[in-house]
Image (cartoon, rainbow, N blue to C red; front, side, top):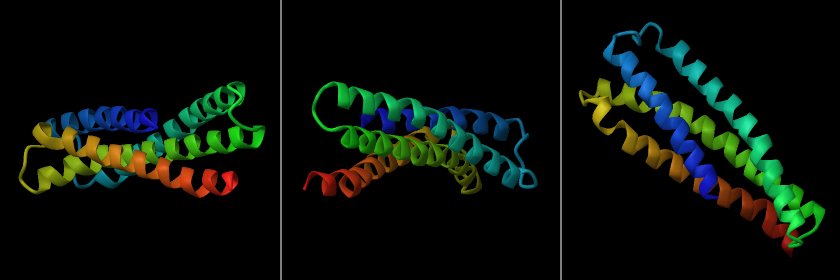
Length: 143
């Protein structure tokens, strides 16, 4: 569970670093913002898929090898971890670009406070998505 939130925080912070630099150098403007937002969302999604496969497989194999549950339980756990990773990294990409843009438009310096907001978003999304999926997928299987 902390890995999902942590990966989102790292990805979001990397995205916002690039975005803050682009805002400072005036490379990111109102005319190209939509294209860049889409690109960052796509990168977040693709990173999420890559890490979902890796982390989902590792979680499933580790759970099954530990003898704690059946093969079906291990697959379900891997799916929960994987889907949570995709959603959180997508949210991280979007937060990493939208928060600095929003702060700049609000008149605040995005370099000063963006990281706090992005990390908060990715932690909340990561934990809620993981726990929500776990409750929806794993609890019914246990009963």
